[in-house]
Length: 440
Ligand code: 5AD
Ligand code: SF4
Image 1 (tube, rainbow, N blue to C red):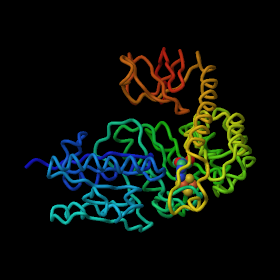
Image 2: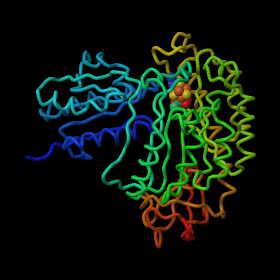
Image 3: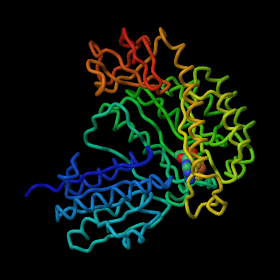
Image 4: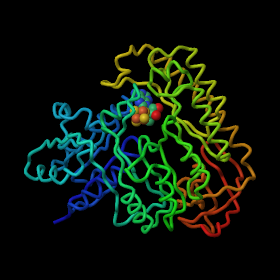
């Protein structure tokens, strides 16, 4: 009999990408094999995101499309996992398009039970229990990529007023440092050379033995690993010790994601972010003094309830002052159950779009200006593989996390090379003259 096949479609953040790996591992243990084609799959899973309304709508519309495929293919089953599964839970059973199973982020260990229930024709199987304790690890048998994510903690205790994450992902918990180190060693054994440590708030990592600064040191010591990144850092928890470690530990890249959200103190307070713009600027100054080469990236949220033109101008001014290397920019969307959902969503959609475009335009011009002086400069690139878009070129990233391509002659996947920037677009450095980095 042909082994059963599964296909996973991942929406949302890097945490979800990691979780899809975990789920794929569980399904493989149950004898399933992964396929890249949903038309060929016995089970199609959608790993969903709830952070903005649009992401959720997208997942639900995908569910509709897959249900049409299920009608045509009879035996195919659909599973909804991730944050929307958690948030909507049993309500999804009532939906016009009924999934065959609904499993929240704390309940992935129950996937084998869901498969048994499907065998017995007992759909839909629902498990959205929020144990608040689930921690998974990713130890694939084979792994093709040079970079990998490792989730070091799950959940969040911050309850920023706009954010649904603490409700769907539960309270913060740290994975034991030994497990993290073992997991990374396993991945390095499979060819991984760069790790990104993941958590909603990595700076509050603590497993009772190691805090985040200690963990960085432990990971930096892993033989064969060449780069370490981490995300996300909440400005209120970024300690001096961690800032020093970024400067000191050679494998930790000069790259820090530090979500600002707004440049207005009034809005930051309404968001329950626990810092003022001044606090944030002081932090940036400290970081840049300790690690002058640091690339700072951020998240900006426009159109929060009650945001005035003056508040918006304060955000634009903050962007001009700080000059981030890159930013993820969003317009506010109401998430039911959050504290902000009780405030009037009083910035019109049209105005949100206008403010978002203004923020994007400004940030793009900052990035363009920052890229210009790079021309002619050497950059260190970890080669991730052949470029799909640029024939005869390999693609990789610099330590600052910028995408870069180099002619593929003489370079191979997993190598660290130094090359000169010949030209730079907003999203890509085009490099030439690559030479292999000694000792990497
Ligand atoms: N609406 C829009 N953006 C949001 N984010 C979080 N919640 C919302 C929301 N309700 C953004 C924040 C956060 C990023 C991951 O998503 O900027 O840092
Ligand atoms: Fe959401 Fe704030 Fe937690 Fe980030 S720190 S996941 S924005 S509640």
